[in-house]
Image (cartoon, rainbow, N blue to C red; front, side):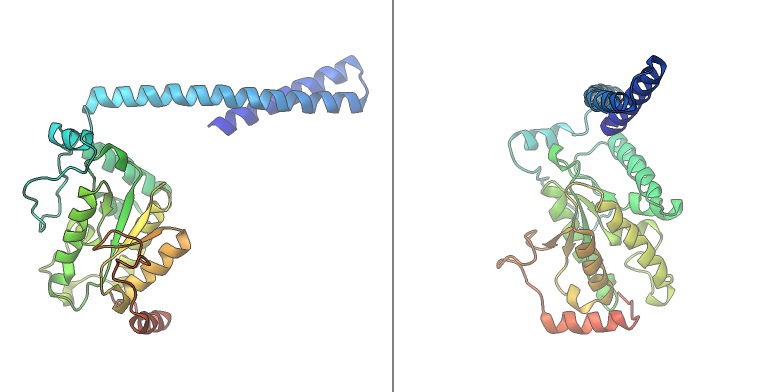
Length: 288
């Protein structure tokens, strides 16, 4: 908005100066030089006005949102955040997929509707964007607004499709101030649970499409990251997500330690498994 208002005002000043110069019969060089100076000056003026207008609109939107939905933090979550640390609920059911610790339902609904709209704007099918938005668990700290992390890891061949590992990672990141997109939660909202028989799981291409847009949406946030569950190197799907995240410029974290994957305290990468999975991926084997 700032650049647009500056450009519009600058072009307007350029056109007015050219027309005025032609009407006055001034030389072409004088008209052009004055028009360029006017465009530069009014571009800066437009940027200033655009910035002021943007701040006024943002403040009005925030104030109006608070009037409609209240504070985005509950009293318990606010107390923990004000103390300088992450909110830590006493007992957290890891197996639940809809855990949003201390975040009012109205706030979650507002954020999900907004994020769903943003994902659709990226070109995602509305029904898939709805599944992705429904699989977001929002953090409890005020500094997590733009911190989104996507959980990646192996599923097929694991008991309960490895959902417990995804749930544990989700709880860990939410407690530490992240908004989490978990494929396990998206699957649940799409009707595929940890108890679904493997032969009834939908076509793999649907997962690829969905997970791509989930990562693509995170790439448009300021603090986007992907967290790899140990064993991801053996999963061709997780390896594909890893390389896509690298391509999109996302941070790569260890889902257990929440540290960068190359940190000595993290689990690191099993080179042989990664090579084998990459080879399988290159040959079109997309099983997760």
